[in-house]
Length: 334
Ligand code: NAD
Ligand code: LMR
Image 1: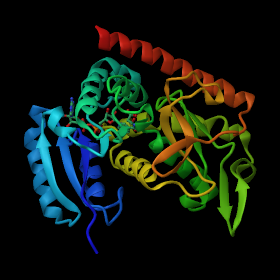
Image 2 (image 1 turned 60 degrees about the horizontal axis):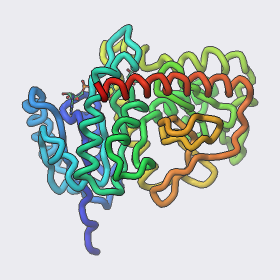
Image 3 (image 1 turned 90 degrees about the horizontal axis):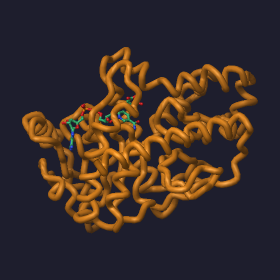
Image 4 (image 1 turned 60 degrees about the vertical axis):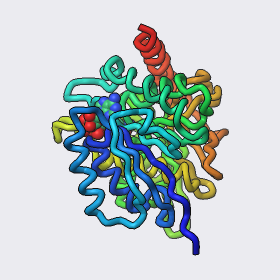
């Protein structure tokens, strides 16, 4: 059987913490499948080139047959040339006591430059996943500066929040995490996000029961549970003195794999995507929504029940994203 043509996959921040886990998972076939060869494009900044050299030695030493080559560079034009998929990880992480939006002025310009480079050099159907924080607003800026690429091709990562929420519910119910379905993260990857299990279910012995019925404690679900997920990133930073990396890389793999290969019938995942006015969210924000995916196209899941409690939460996180958008545009225009 003829082997598939390799696809080109760029990882920015390739010498950083998240990339260190992510690159091995991409190389192993966890994202694009075990029959899909890849050529890795690894972008970082000049001071990180020594470390990146070591990462490349390790890529060689992984001895993985799917890796058909790699490009190690500090030049966005070379990094984004003909890429099919882009993991935009490279950005400053927050430290203890910071909110993710405190990174905005430092990081947003990176995404302006990379948007322009994607526009000029990437394939027009490139799938872009922004991980670097503040992820939603960085994705918006990146897309703004890449007008020749459809807006649907730019997404921000809220899969880590989804995984955290799914895991917290599974732990509470003492069930396997894969039995918890359809948890939704709404809005910003920030402490205003709304982790919503109103439409989520637990599968057991072929039966599906709502998470609300199984847990039977709305005070916990609408209080401690939400707060824990909203502040989980900060809790990891406090404990590790560095931001989450292993779980962030796994979430990036989950996000891109589902975008590439699709979701199964009746299930959805959460991705920061361009809003079209659904659920009363202002148009044109990169806002985390429940999406189903087939043929590499995501579609917002419509018709989910939004309670008054949920509506307040959806509005609050939209307001923060509108403010971030304004600030980001001001930084880029300065
Ligand atoms: P890190 O500091 O370990 O690595 C970042 C890398 O990016 C470094 O190697 C740095 O040299 C590189 N870099 C900086 N500017 C660059 C540029 N202009 N072009 C290319 N590379 C550049 O950080 P990390 O732990 O890997 O985190 C990376 C980002 O991901 C941070 O912004 C962090 O807050 C974010 N993050 C997001 C999520 C999420 O769920 N969306 C989860 C975890 C971390
Ligand atoms: C996370 O959620 O762990 C990351 O976004 C890192 C952070 O700053 O919280």
